[in-house]
Image (cartoon, rainbow, N blue to C red; front, side, top):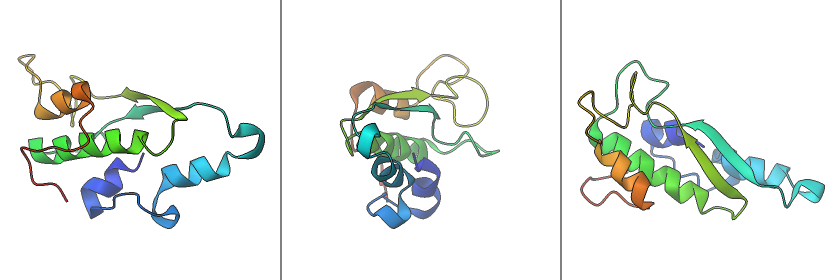
Length: 116
């Protein structure tokens, strides 16, 4: 759902031209206009060799929650990298990173961090 573009470029998915999610929604009109859209294997930092900072991950998590508000058709999001690899939501000791709290509360902002 464009989280990599948000983290790398600060793109907020505000236009059709820069937002894959908006393109999918527009492209699935007609007989597809009422189907649910599930975003699977989404996360912040899973395509990087380095883990994102707590701030990057928290801001990215809030961005993902905002993306689900684009349409009532987007009603499920399956997260990856909960415990292993870069971008995990839990530390090796089992404690949650700040992004996990944002996702659990469905926060659309990361108030402890300065986001783009």
